[in-house]
Amino acid sequence: MIPALLFGAGAGTGLWLLLTWALPPAPALSDQLAQISSRPPDPLIVLAADAAWVRRWGRVFVPGLRKIGLPGAKIEADLRVTGRGVDTHLASKGVLTEAGLLVPWLLQAALALGGLSLGVDVPLLAGLVLAALGFLTPDLDVRAKATQRRREFRDALSAFLDLVWITLAGGAGVEAALGDAAAVGTGPAFDKIRRALYAAQLTRTTPWTTLRQLGEELDIAELSELATSISLAGTEGTRVRASLAAKAQALRTHQVAEAETDAQAATERMALPVTLLFLGFLGFIAYPAVIQVLNGL
Image 1 (cartoon, one colour):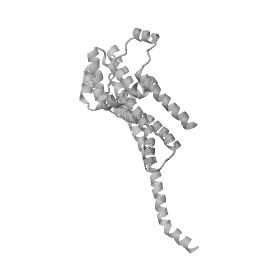
Image 2: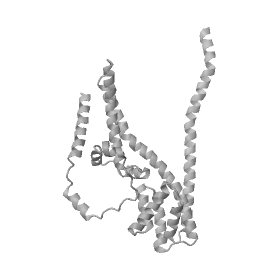
Image 3: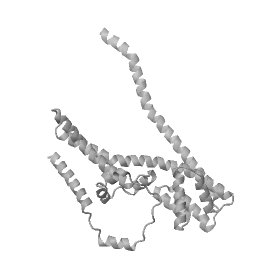
């Protein structure tokens, strides 16, 4: 009974995804009116291209997964930080889920050719577990990479702040200081900052506006706070050199604290292997004595 229910649920979900892809539902009239009357969103500063294989094999999964609200705002920000396209991420989830479902049955077919059989329950349960792992693995992977990229961005941002306040101390204006500081640095973080400043020039907006938008897109609060501080200098003439220096120092202090935390975590992770190695060494030394005692009984 349980395998039949699971097969029915899987078949129904697959048919629903295929119908959603082939016959997408028409949007409601209220949604269309709200879209017409609302202000169009600002174009994204950080764009990521999708992989070539997605255009061939993964498009069948993308519409259905988008209909159920995936990938979510948090994952989208993580994808922008890592430079992975949303369609690539959703296609990866779909392909890995399908692979997890099919691999146990392919193994079952290979064993059946050799005269062996695992029954129905084993490949069914294994397929469900592997499918769940395949569905969650892309999210876990992009979250781990996004955390590392944000840390690297904060490291670069502290250097960018130092360059900005040094340039301001030399008598440059706010916009000139931002452009000169961004032109000096290298790496992905400085590339994104230069792209934001270039977008401000193209759209004829203030650079702190695009920097704030970049911070919101990448979910980096420090960048949004920097944009707020610089906007005070650009609009109200506030002197922000001391504030930028304090922010840079605070970022470096946070980096040192994170490095110490990582070092302590690595030390704690090494405790278990060292303990197991010590126990194995004790067993190796005590083995001859134990054998002699057992043989003498």
